[in-house]
Amino acid sequence: MEWTEVNIYTTTAAIELLTVKLMDIGIKGFAIQDAEDFNEFLENKNGQWDYIDDDLMGLSHCETCITVYLPCNEQGADMLSAIRSMLSELKSSDSEGAYGRLEAELTSIREEDWANNWKQYFKPLKVGEKLVIKPSWEEYNDDGQRIILEIDPASSFGTGQHHTTRLCLELLEKSLNSGDKLLDMGCGSGILSIGALLLGAGNAVAVDIEQNAAETALENAVKNHISPDVYKTYFGNILTDEKLASEIDDKYDIITANIVADVLIAMKEHFVRYIRKGGTLIVSGIIEERMDEVISALESVGFKGPEANLKEGWAAVRFTY
Image (cartoon, rainbow, N blue to C red; front, side):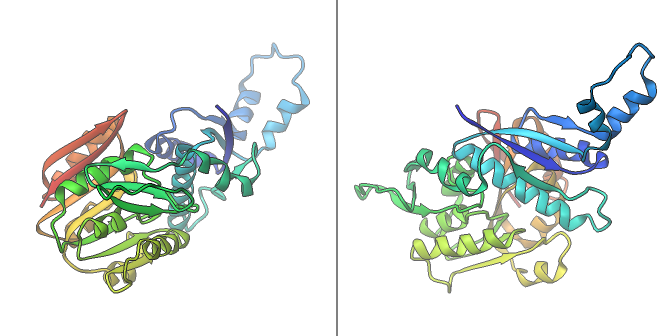
């Protein structure tokens, strides 16, 4: 398998925070290059070092960097999108610049090639009992047994190939009633909200912190013949932007949020704000080790009856309110 090296530039102060968030995305291993570590070594070395290579000395002036390696396939593309969304969210909350430039740079493959190389792995995929997800560039022989959900993720998260998306869609199919009003928080490609409309939802609102994700979701809605009358997209951070939070204010029958554990926990009061009494909340993007933590946080604000859908270390959980 081929791998792509991703270098994330930050500061010493943000290393612990970023590594936790990377693990939430599903990245288990990383290399850290930090000038402060090397300077500490220079200050505390025991005198037995007669010579230190010039390349090592260069570490004393390096920019702090966390390096991860992603597979060159659809899962790697989804992970890269998740990393970029996470970095964008951190930037928006880092008014003092304590976390550095928070940029991800690819070094082992040209940036313009990344968006196309993984497409060979993105094939039509049956999800649940009713949907088949297909990329816009693939043909699918429709036998009339399934509803076709056509997705072009561009640079946004959400092809359906990643377990978090599939687990969420499976719970959504079981939960949805005809005419339901849905809110998709952290919409990415729009796959969950568009899937809900194809499955019978009455209307949907999709929100993402990145503008390109909101735009991609709208484009995908058009591909699936969804009327703009029933599908609205917004971008911004509802945790810090009350104007946006108020703009989408309503009581929804179903809320979906396929993000990461820390953000789901931070958004718990917003879920309460937007859910109707008796409504359904479906959260995903959770590594199994943090599922109990997320469940506990959501139960603390009134959500109940958690039902987990698990697959290979990932979890999606359905609640009622």
